[in-house]
Length: 155
Image (tube, rainbow, N blue to C red):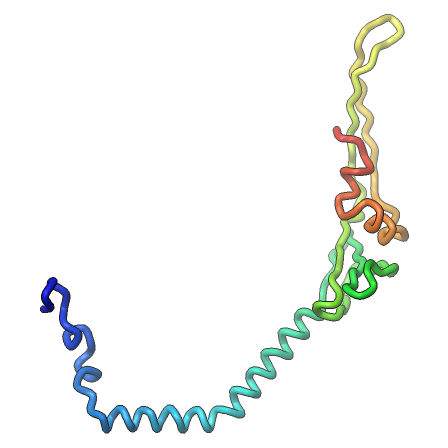
């Protein structure tokens, strides 16, 4: 035991490592050097394969049913094409998809109004809304991704 009750260094190490001779350390160093020499092409190939798989994965995006997408390009801005459901390609880092939910959504507007005989009447109007799919790029440019809250009055 050490001075403060902690085990000494030789007591913490396994017996095989604490009694390692310089010859054993030298043979371990040689084995690691040989593995590094032989494994160089394997490491380069593995890194290339991993990089290619990452590039392909980031080049593909999916648009779900009931959704449409437009692309934002870092060089040209919002594109004018609208992409339907399915798998689409993009240039990683340069383009990113902006996906819109274009399903019909209900919106209810409540209003408290007076009648002709001075009684207060609560009226509810329920409307079904969805964006015009041909004008999605224009909607995104002018109103942003939260167009629904900006166009329709609060409930």
